Image (cartoon, rainbow, N blue to C red; front, side, top):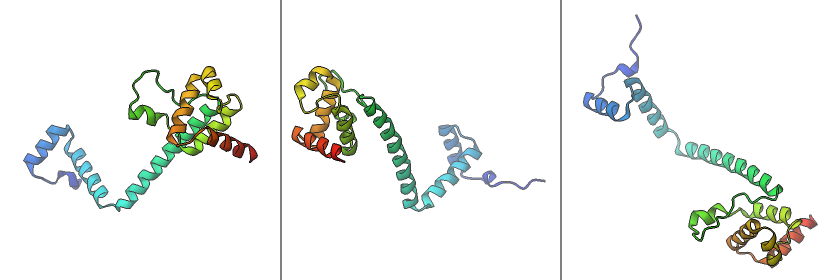
Amino acid sequence: MKPKVDFHIKADKAKADRAKELSGLTNRELYELGCQIAIEQNRNVLDTEILELHEAMDKVNDLTKSIRLRLKDKEVPTKPSDGAETDDDELRRNHLPLDLFQEMVLYYMDDYDITDLQDLSSKNKEIFRFVLINLAYHEMNIEDVNALYKEINSE
């Protein structure tokens, strides 16, 4: 004869019935969920945050690889919208971290004279708008871009 397992232990029937009704879970699933919550609540909080940090870093690394591929192909990672509405998400979506912006300057500068905004705006409006958004975000100007390009090419 099999011994009874823990999830058969009687709990507050009204509470258990209400939990099953709201969640659609079985007694066993409710028990396992309760065990998981107890484990998470008693785990070192820093352990969980460190694991979440590693997951976020993995995602950033994957996104960075994808952005670099687009930059090498002379594409903007995300296209600024043509509409007049510019909400916070629209601008944030087009901001690159400084190191990626520096790579963008390196990849685009050979084909587009980024320091000549008139020339750039007539050749590729997407790149022109993307460059302007990132210049403003990093509080840079065209002289900074020239210095950055010279620095990158001297390495």
